[in-house]
Image 1: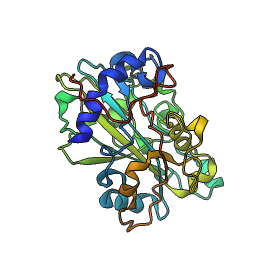
Image 2 (image 1 turned 180 degrees about the vertical axis):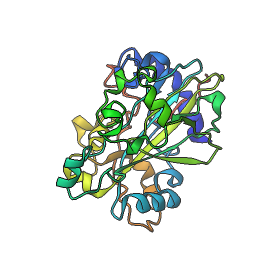
Image 3 (image 1 turned 60 degrees about the vertical axis):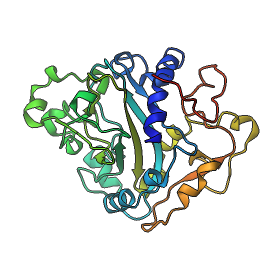
Image 4 (image 1 turned 45 degrees about the vertical axis):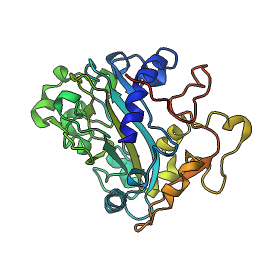
Length: 304
């Protein structure tokens, strides 16, 4: 409940910041979401908003290990909010495979189509039905290859900003969309290669959605793009003060020291939670990058 309040209370602030920092337009002002009221809005990274129920969840970590193998790690925590009146995003994938072709897979000793390497975990702190903009996914598209439909429908090689359904009827014939409806407390898992898009939220309530990404350890050595993205949500003063705890990977996700105990929950499956901590306030909405004052530590109880 607290996380729901936090992300909804901040939706208006994130929308205001969008005009000053393109990150909040979900890849800028283009057709991918920004001008259609789909915000890339990270959840808070301090107590009391961060709990072991989602950053160290036993069920989530068990499934991640089963899909990705032992030693999988968390490399990303962000989110998307569909504001009331939102439109359609363009169809897109979140990450290609490290081995998008048969030749690349063979050179890496991998099968083809490639196995799952990036597992996305989505959940919302509110119940989500079609009226609140439940995400649209296209099951099976994560296994499309460069030989499928002469490559026109290959999520690995298409420019998603140029992908329009009406241009590729063979895609529509082969794959069918589905909407992911989730009760409060439910999570969904999807391969990062799966085509999907945000859709209209016709309710009067902002629909927040948290996104965690777990990865197979093999991609860490090849330059995992999600670890780079993790640096986009810094502590407000950490560049100057260097008050990060440096006992782990320098590209680990940054969290407030006040939620350190949530990551200490029993780790039954050996998942690398990949966290470091700071005493600074986490700038999860990117205020400093927008040229604004740093955020306050505690979220004020504004009303939407």
